[in-house]
Length: 263
Image (cartoon, helix red, strand yellow):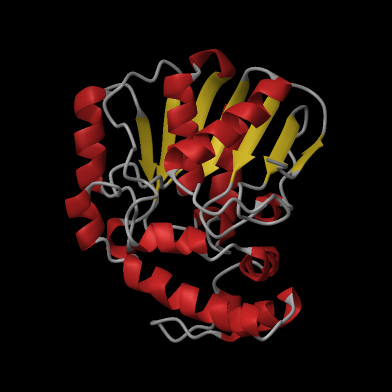
C-alpha cells in the first residue's frame, strides 16, 4: 500500500488526518512554527493507492499507525473520519500519541441507530452522484472546484462565500481522485461500524465541535455519552460552525488558534 505522505518544518510532530472524501491538500495552508507538520492521503483518497474492499475504519487506523510510526510520538489532529482514526490510534498504539486534537469527530455515527438517523447521509448520496458524473466526464479538478464554488447554500450564499478558496480547491482535487467505493461504505454504514467509544484513551484529548443546529457530527448528546467513559475529554463547541470548521472563512482563525495553542 503506497500512501502519499508530505512533511514540512522542524520540531515536534503534528500529524494531520483529513476527513472522508478529502485529502491532505485540505491542510495545504497550514504551517505551525517550531513544529513538523505531516500530511498524508488515506487509501482511496488523493495520491494514495486505491484499495477496493478495504475502506473500513480499521484499515484507516492501520494506515495512520504506519505513517505515525515513521515519525515517532506525535500530536494527532483529525477532522471527521480523521478524528475517529486518531482516536483509534490512541487506543491501539498509545505509545505513538502525545495528544489528540479532534475536529467534530463522528465517534458514534457508526452505530446502526445513529447511522439511520444521520442527516448527513443524503448529502453523501448526492456527493457520490456528482462525483460519479464528474469522473465519468473526465472533468478537471479546476472545473469541479468552479462548480463547488458556485453551489448555493440554504441561506442564499454561494459556497465561495462560506469556505476558503484553498478549501474549495482541495475539495475539487479530492473528488476528482476519490475511489467512489469509499462513499459506498459511508452510505451503507460500514465505514465507522467498528468505532470504539469505550476503551481507554490515555492521551489528552481536545474536541473542537460544530454547532448542534448546523449538523454537528459530534453533537451535545454524543458529548454527554463520551463523558460517561472518558470524563477528562475537553470539548469546545463553536456557535455558528458547521462540520467543516477548518474550511470555513468565519472559523478557520479560531481553528488555527486552538490547534496552535495545543501543538
